[in-house]
Length: 190
Length: 244
Image (cartoon, rainbow over all chains, first blue to last red; front, side):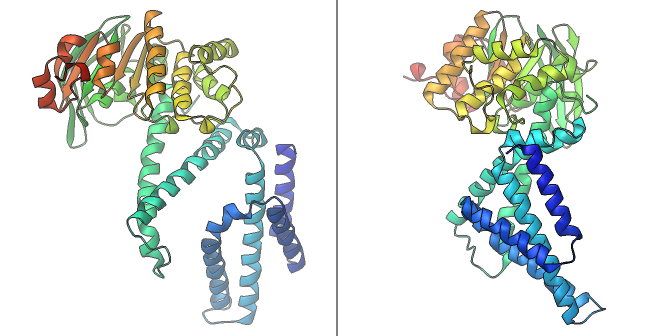
């Protein structure tokens, strides 16, 4: 499918999910996206993300549930918490589906209508994604081989040794990438 | 071609280059070697103006490349004279196709005939037919060749490579070095930062030996690399054929 058309469909569907106040619209969209996930057999690639996504959903539900009308639990807050969490997951599913089924070059073409600098930032981000995935995996393997327990209930203690080297290495390498771009004549105003 | 006089460079709180003076002639194949942290990469960044323009630090001395003072000229102007290939290809390829990667520098420098130049550069490194491939999916050797091609397309007179084969197997290593040798035969000045002294002994005609921000010795490659005592003292590998 044409990447630009796919991007158009994504924008329309995501907008519909964002503006709709009907639970049915969100549920149908989420279920359709899930069916496509399983039909295209890409659900396996996202298994690692289930836990953090559930954590974000839980945070949204609890925040809404306890702060909807001042501080204190309300059923109304809980309903809106579940609604916003569902909205968040649906948009996440739609974006993941779009990114996973469109080759990198297609993604770049889809965003080609944007002004030069913004388009470059998007292309750079897209080009960095596979490297970051690789880097994360390498750090995970290194930390696992040193006995880091990812089933520990202490999330901070578990993910800190992964996030710190990931940020440090990414910052360092992004700086090198900027130098490599300048070495090939790139100037921010060009 | 490259004249450096009394070059000093310090990052905040740390001196990296200490009173460096050197001359590199046109058409030579120069190897820069020395232990880790001796200032080799920092020196390479001075060749095309990345230092002092893009890296913060205290800079003094004169660096002239093809008659251009690197302090007074923009990096983009120096990029037409000096092509710099960094150590890790994974973090210097930033477009989504091989063709776009080659054309990136050409467009920045507003060069003409981008398609022709890209085709020729890919031909020189043996990557014809890969124009539409995604750089990230290439093998490590191919990525390194792509980095070299993207610099070659800009037709610089000098090509500087920072440890170009540190992640490659023997076959890819020899492949890359043979490409560099053929470019050198065609008149390009090649400067390679390299730990593997066997490669320098085979390919370079001049070697610059660095230690702790200083040039310890520079001159004929064979002469310098056969000084076993000095190499051992600096923690530099003695070439295999001279080890006995």
